[in-house]
Length: 131
Length: 404
Image (cartoon, each protein chain N blue to C red):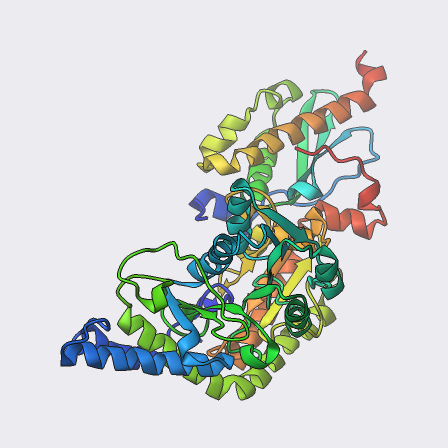
């Protein structure tokens, strides 16, 4: 399997690697995938409760180069976006940006799922406040 | 040091310079057809083939008249299994093999199943060895052939071939072994061990690709095969087709070298392999050896680096040419069936790397490889949510993952 330059760049210099405090009320955590399937992504977002803006995003990924690149790219894209804007990101945008081959499309799907899971975790935590 | 460093000797090996030299005349000056009985060109080619036959026979303890040349071990395995099944179907239609054979064996067996044969695929223990007693229990009066791999290509585990061969003798059942990885690494004596059929190939022992051989016992018992390539009746009628003279000459030379170098090569390569494994174990936690710790090929190391996916690991150590049992590296998206067969969970199968050392592997290369592996695993574990969870004391088995 040969990789595109963008995938290699994200793999070699992953953006926003790390963890946020998962217990903080303004942090949403998404953990998607399964070790048995060969990829697991953890994507976390820190939300500015005033503006609903994603102030920070971090990820850690177990998976192939394309999975790492997809999640790295996802954190890059959602930082500075509002929750609603982040929810508009589609896996196909990631496929296009990274020129992923068909066999790697599931990596982009997982990244989209991770964004959604992180947002849904944040919203669940803050249900009382947003309701 | 030249990059990338080749550590995939179970996949294939480079042609030894001496082998190449031996082959060259047979492409040009000595180009005759070994089957041309009426002139000098044919005679020279034939005598070169006969020398190679002797050299190969010597490596496995056979007589040269028992060597059938083929296009490679896939053909040898097909010919042995399908050839015996068809020839002896009046006697019975049951064959026994194991779950972790090479695909050339497994797929041949599956195709026989479709033709009405019954195949028993025996499980192996967690090292990858088949229990001879299980072979005995699986035998029925209909059993005509047992086929087990000598040394597994992924995990390097050696099967108790001698015991299985003896058992087959006792029960009057033919025994075939795929010895592609074992040849030139462990001593092989088909005659005294009681092996009836044995597959080997040139390109795993520093010979050229596209040429292999099948050993077919000639007496006690005389094994007969139904050929599937028909034509001029070459190779005792078992495999028609003009012989690949340069390839066969190279195969012979490679066999001769393998025999000459085996004992010292084994010691040298095993030492490097052990250094690599000891280094990995001492510098990294959560690493697991796949296969048998002792009864394995001297040049094979297969390790699961927990919490780090194999393909991304290989991507991070692009200076090393290795292979992985991870699904992401296969077209099927399924992790290695061999690792599954020895009870390695899919989670760990995805993290496995096979290192194959060989004749041209140097100390310097292994030192570099060790450092590169350790560095890359550490880097990727910093990136791994699973390693983080493991460090936090979370039992990953207790998490309800959403399989996708």
